[in-house]
Image 1 (cartoon, rainbow, N blue to C red):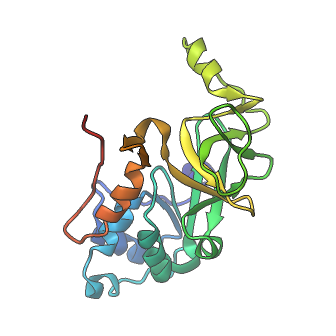
Image 2: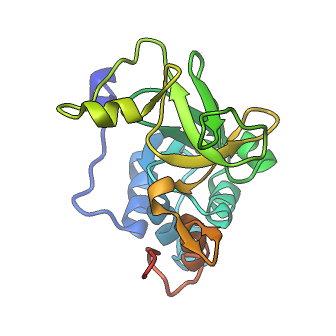
Length: 219
């Protein structure tokens, strides 16, 4: 997209936290895209290192692709301010987005549906759930028609009333903001209780000795 629009693009042969800060300052970078693991590594830098770089040129630091722990994002917003944006989307079409200010009012949200897109949350029988109740997330984007190549069963299983799902679990609040729990396939049932690995991983990565974490069930 940046090349298509004629933007100057800064490339890193190997991403490092301090290297990213150095390039933001040197090239006056205005926008970029990161994932939560990068945020965690940036925050693990000593305060004197983080504060020694000028990142005031940033206008949009977009993140997505994985759940971002609430405390991680809160600290990034305190550091980088309104440049932090998040989106939740699927290649199949549709999604949500949220600004830093909106997120601070609703910590943990991945935002509201894009213009023209619709998001619903349903139970196991396909019934719409009220605000605050978790279920399967479905999206719909006009004109976004797709099928999984060579897999009619998977295509059919992903559809509901013109909406589609990629298997994520979450809930909508009364304002239409989406909150994600995890993927349905990743959920672990322990003693009859639904345990979402993403929530545990989010706590583990807050420890300064943890670079990243993956939680899974063992029979």
